[in-house]
Length: 331
Image (cartoon, rainbow, N blue to C red; front, side, top):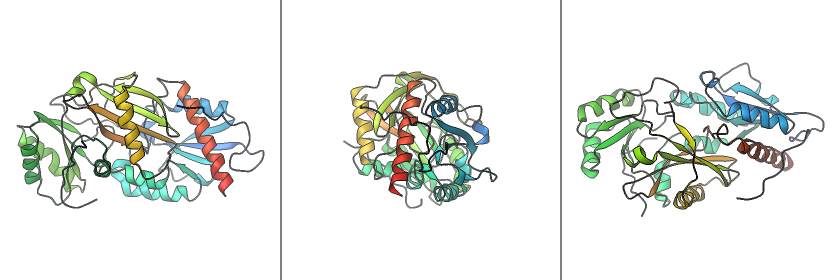
């Protein structure tokens, strides 16, 4: 996405389907349902969702296999369903990944679907949410070709924050994200320039220091219904360089979300133009007034933290197989 930098203005459960039995949800009697859990090589030992998902699909009478999105030897058409799970290395190869998404969706049911993945893969979507009245973390985008010094100075004039976060608009796992003092102008520009020169739009956000106290709340929805939530500890230590790993180390614990957090998450879901999604994760942090704001919407390949809430994997599998059956019935 291109265009002049703009400031985002802050905006003033039910019964599950039972898991599928051993039959083909795509409509061929007697054929075992084959599900691809889409990942990447670097995530194989890191994705804690995979073991509970494989077990839950097996318990439901389906066969789940882990497959890398960029593995040219995979025949995606042999799967009845492909679930995007941990394709976390796509951010520096976005055109290639989106081409793979479109091609794979032409040969099997891909969830979440391509339109959702395209929209969610670039955090310019925060503009859309703000325009639809969803309270988001105030964000200024620094697009390629912009005068980054002028954009930064305007940001600092508008926001009196002691610290800010600079990160790519297409990014994951806190890679290339850093927390800066507002006084460290040269350091901030040195962070922005090489990434902008590489064609990557950047974003500036006030560092809301409530995250040091409260952490983030990630709310997971399955088939449009709230399932569970976790707390993430602070991810960006002051003065630390960007992580060189696939994602920054995370401190994860279960959390019961507040009523205000559930309300903001519901507003965010309602603002989406895609209808009910199989899965969604909404990450919130509290501002200086202790009000929750959307930091990110994770609709493409989020961790869903089944390791911390094991029963949720069975609910997810039931919803996925139900969606597969509904898709088959429409053909």
